Figure 1 (cartoon, helix red, strand yellow):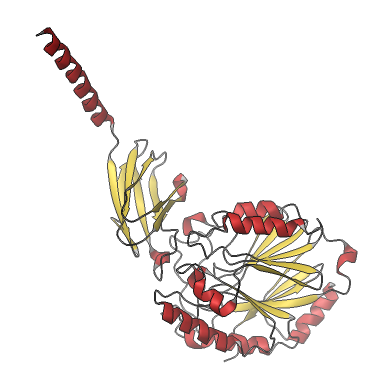
Figure 2 (cartoon, one colour; figure 1 turned 30 degrees about the vertical axis):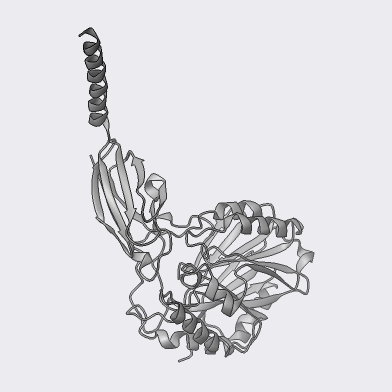
Length: 290
Length: 116
């Protein structure tokens, strides 16, 4: 998508969100994306079932975000949820009740192609058992308009590991790709050591990055840290999304990773619209439908 | 008589070695973990001096991670996990659970104070 097209997109979408422009696929050949532009929306860290001072509106925030995305002038091709769909509970029945209610709420999305993945709140206490009942596999691939998507699970192991088996699966999948294929990785926790003192890492994430480094057009979208964040590891861009429950402080900006104080305008919450093309703007979409 | 002296000398040597070993053994800091806290949550040691962290769990598997010293281990119920650490810097260093253990996991942390 050219910059002019992107301005059209923003106008059509009627969005007031902050934009972030980046070459998502730095090694991409100009001819590779002709006619293949598309966009998707990323939801993350909805934490359905959370109750607390960090978000007194927790029962309605997800519904508002669904309504906001349904109101986008140009609907996305598909929607991804990068984990922590529900807030954790020790009670397996309550965990399933939260997943059931979450699924009911997001079933109101106009776009029906929705891809889920777990966060540690969904999957770490039972190794993904309940999650799989409701949402299926915790790691998988799919292809869309010439782009290969890989969803990685770094939460079903409570020690935040991808594990040897999944890494072997990833290596086997990547062997089928060409060096300049466009690859989007979706995951919950950062694959790199963003802030080890706050456990914002994946124990064996470096092994996944090492596998991905052989490919020139890779971008990673993740959640977990409840804020917009952008970082490069070599030529690979990593983009963290805002949450829909409460924002967390910038990495290392304060002694503890405690939630930021609640603001009724919810400026720290939202979803993200991602346009996949040569030069791309990530549009942060605030929660606005009251 | 001569044999007894030899035994006594051998025993004395062995005991002396034990005493020397005891004198050189690093001090221990015992830390117990349970959802969602460590006890004690604050411990103090000296810089440059080896210390043994003796870690136990009262309920389930927890983690113990202290990135400032490149240290992490699981803490498994029913067994003592012993980790030797020689802090090379002064300050307050956070340790935390890195094995997700429930609603409160994110608050499960403590601090090791390393004094000059």
